[in-house]
Length: 316
Image (cartoon, rainbow, N blue to C red; front, side, top):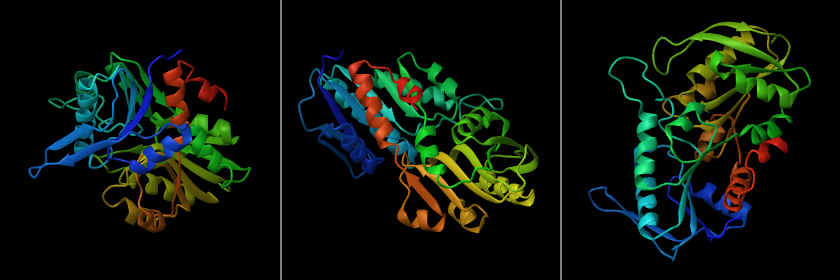
């Protein structure tokens, strides 16, 4: 049982999500001032008494990644110096997660560096949603809750696909995720074998599984430039799929992503609101945004009271 007062704060990365979490959890969003000096330095001030409290700071490190990360670190430091008893960073999107290992000589493991920075700033716990690589939890010496957007996405997808549906993993690494989606949607499983000649480029090779005449759902943890996604969708249509929809927790949607989606055969891309997606992008890219605020709000309450977080998914 928790004894500290709970308080909820947000940086500027995704204020609409923070407000939705506040509403879903019935926890008032605290007052905080963030501004920039003329040279770009970030200044933060907590505008209320937080001494002895359990503070949850909502800040996905989405684009602009470095600005949002630095703002989070400074907020954590401000909390620590304001005598907060416990600081939990709620990072619905964990930036730098793709750099979780050395892929070639003389390259960094940036996801580990981010973990070190957060802990050096004074964070006591991390909450994230669908980490790109689950082993990132092992980079931390503080508790880490990796939540899953599966339930939020499948609730919507059930209304979009027929009984003869196939969940498709765009690569071998995503098979476990695709299998979990397939179980919830009572759908079969397919895998696309692809080769990636260089970063942000992919080449579809062949499809393992039954897709002809079926509604196909491509699932992944994030959509960045949408090259992999659109190539996979075209391969499925060429193999006789009835229609293709896609689902991803994080809609990064950088570079040519919207243009590619607009030209693609994907009927709809479903993402959560871990990263803000403008109305214009939603319209052009045929994107549907579903909210993860209820999931995050419930997780925050359970963490504070010491209840089971894994129970959120067992109950589904």
